[in-house]
Picture 1 (cartoon, rainbow, N blue to C red):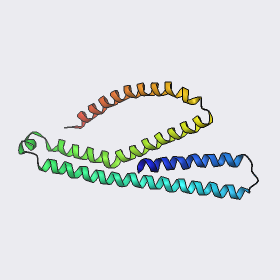
Picture 2 (cartoon, helix red, strand yellow):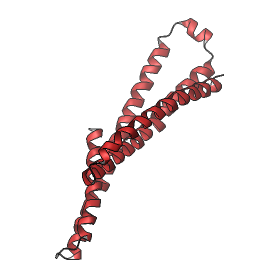
Picture 3 (cartoon, rainbow, N blue to C red):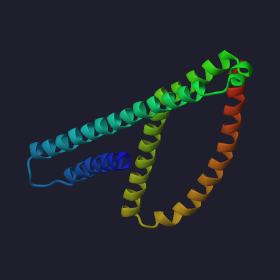
Picture 4 (cartoon, helix red, strand yellow):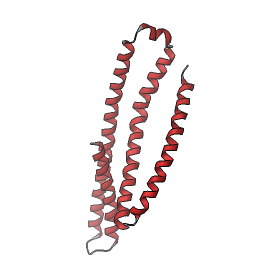
Length: 169
C-alpha cells in the first residue's frame, strides 16, 4: 500500500510536469482552463503526499508499540542472572535508543528513501521515454553505484558499531 501511494504520488508529479509542457506548446483553449487543470493536479499531489505520510507514520506508531511490548516482555521474562550481569544504565540506554530509532528516525528515513527512489525511478522513466538510448547508459551507472554502495555500507556499519559501543556505559 505504501509503495502504491508513492508510485501514485510520483505519477501525479510527472503528470503535473507533463501538463506544463502540454500547456506551453500553445493550444486554442483558454489560459484559465490550463490553470485550473494544473491546480487540480497539484491539489491531488498534495493530498497523495499527505496520505502517504499519514500511512507511514501510522505504521511507524504500530511498529514502535509492538517493538516496545516485545522488548519489555523479553526483559520481564529474562533470568535473574541477566539483571546481575547487565547494568541498568545499559538496559535503559538500549530501550531508549531502539525506541527513538523506530519512533523518530526509521519511518522518517524510510519516507525519504522511498521518495528519493521513486523520484529517481520517475526521472529514469521520463528520460528513457524521451531518449531511449539512455537505457544503454544506465547499466554502467548502476554497476558503479552498486560498487560504491557496497563500500559505503561496510564503512557505515563499522562506524555505527563504534558509536553504539561508545554510548554504552
